Length: 367
Image (cartoon, rainbow, N blue to C red; front, side, top):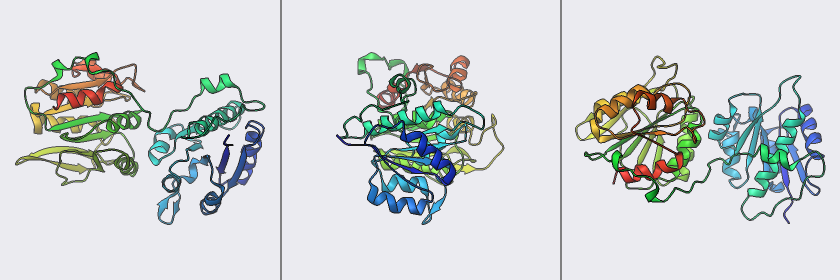
């Protein structure tokens, strides 16, 4: 039976000592634990220690090591080792997952109870250790770790696998367009990196070009695109002004820049420019969808995913009014049923679908 080999990286020696002390009496007998304070020292130790799980203070994730950010560098050097990030940011989950962490956990603030955090961290470590391919389950913990706590706080894998329902389960007839679809536009916000990842992992050529706005900070849009490009069958990049939209390519709007589409001759061209926020965000889904409606008419397809607010609803309605098939992610599979709901209630969504059915819908509609 393979024992747990845990590597902890935290730049605070004081907190690292507390962390290791709390974990030691929660982890199973036979677990091995190593640690480091600085990224370079961690990389040296990791080569010989060969961990099964890494835990990392998220504050270290963006530090540069040999001109590369530390967390993506860890992912590249140890691709089969799950990395659990923890930190003080409320919204750290999305950024940590984009950088390559398996999951992110928020540390309790000053004066807040800590036992639940360490119990949850222990259960998450054991879960990821046991999920690693070819690894047998770790023995049960010897003290404060509880199996019912594990169930209540189960972690989510970086990109959840899905099994689409049978083709006959959903009728896509109403979504088929009389025109040839030569452009697909998508918009997402909270929970969107995970939702888009699920969908994109199940798309296969041949497909028209895809343009995406995901509410995401600068730099992370590039990292998100690079990660997907390394894992998926389509070619994926962060969009740039002047890009010509090609079949079997996906273009993700850069953070802090609105992305628009125009038709030049027989192809679509992208323009990415800073601009005032729309619905308090930049890039904005509405800005993209408005331009797609103007450039493509009924030759485009629009999809709106999970997110807070109503960005994208009005633009998707314009697309539908021009004859484009439109889809909204349903409430049950949305992290936040805000943007899809606003679009649905406005009449912009032709059909609501669960996340796991959207890849099949795309492939059926563009046939």
